[in-house]
Image (cartoon, helix red, strand yellow):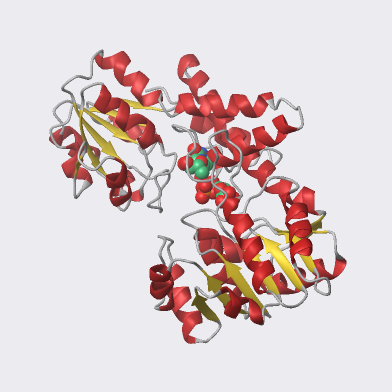
Length: 432
Ligand code: UGA
């Protein structure tokens, strides 16, 4: 099958590469010439483990191409995938500017019947309006069908996820279009669930909102655990053993971040608001997460009073491990506040430093290693659970820090290990 994918962010690129790997001829389109030149050489513009190798392989085998030319890409396509961003507007709604641009490009360059597949996360009803717009713009003898096919990839494990997902959702109101997209996806060997278009759009938001709720729930339990002397990790295991609860997404910490949960929870709240429904539970999840991201700050103020002149080491800037993405990361909430309070901040992350430098170029002292970041500090904050941090010996902290205050926002160390040292250790939902 010939497939055109518009947009080469992490959704579009991973989708394009995945579809080529299962045997389709894929052409990915992006307006950024420099990016396209790099991708043609098999270089991924995003950090995603395993992606470069897979790109190179499929380019070599002739199934994967990149272009800036829409006409060329659309010419032989059986399906056009829309995978452009839907960033957050100031009021929390999804911004559909890029989606609308692609709709116009399709209308301009497509000369035959076409199936358009929306991968981007879009508010419920968007696919129906895409279809209406397209059919109004296309010549009368040409017909466009639209299919909602949300993505469930996680940054950092997107390559694994595309071949090992739990389900592929196909939302369509045309049997022929649904059958085509089913045929395209069948080689993945992942269960396919067909729905109507609006339900598929909602599945995406509801899934992310539910996972965010699960995280906020376990974080609230963690906060209560701290007060009553229970251990949230034991509680999470005990809860997860009930298959109705499940073990995943019960890891307590300093809240969720990234480009999806914060944006999609706010967008779903807005979707509900627009139909006069007050999604109170989701509002609480969002508000609570904002508070949870500040938890280590509150602890620091409680322990130290003033942070003026204190030297603070920050381990981890990315919103989670295995990504250089800092969007909505706890580090972006915590570090500016530490600076405002007059602290001196040293920070290390295995790969996200360059992205943080774009936000705070000179205010932070960036270090080349975790050990340098903790050296001579009064307090160390662990904000991302990189393996590199988990495997640090606690002795290093004791030896290198001025005073051994470690606040571990991701529960990287076992309490047994910590107890062997004279450390003021604070973690989430666990009592020393
Ligand atoms: C999330 C979803 O997991 C994907 O299914 C979805 O496709 C994607 O959003 C999207 O909409 O594009 P992602 O944002 O890459 O993926 O990251 P996750 O691994 O889900 O983690 C999100 C945040 O939750 C991170 O900050 C992580 O630290 C936090 N988290 C996750 C917890 O605090 N506890 C957990 O138990 C799990």
